[in-house]
Length: 223
Image (spheres, helix red, strand yellow):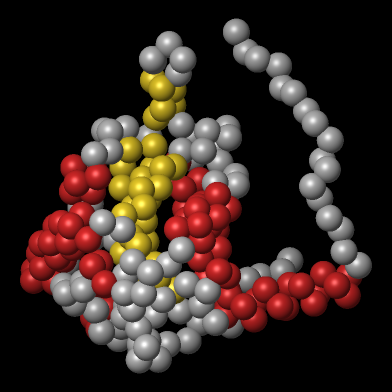
């Protein structure tokens, strides 16, 4: 039997005058323009509360049928991080030594990446993001989740932006396959690893690739 929808007043919406909207939009763009993917991290500790607040922000993301098909595993234990690094580098060695098409390797060359991933141990936090293919109802039966990849992708984008807003650097790491994360972190089979998000303070002398982003006229069309 279908449950009837229940509605409440939209009390959280805040409207701004057009000039204020433009100021806020430009300010936000300026802030996110400073965000860079960082591969060199300090081991300085980060307050757990900062991570908790950013995860709570990610949990506000829209999702298919509001099933919220994500789970975040926050790893700070040095031994667990070492296990994750070892497993990830095994996959990366296979990728860089014959597993990836040359075209892909050529595209990555400008970023200077390779199979060595010391940041997986140096950074204070790794956040393993899992996509729930299905969940379980009150009777223990499977309940299908909808638009899982899209939903988890949106939540991840909010998380990355929240961490940047809080003053932390991030790196999205996607060794393939990532099934080792289920084993190391003890996650159930209904969860599929989506990506591994590295976060913390950048190293004092961290460097990033000299790259640019496409201008607005190349990424958007107004009709």
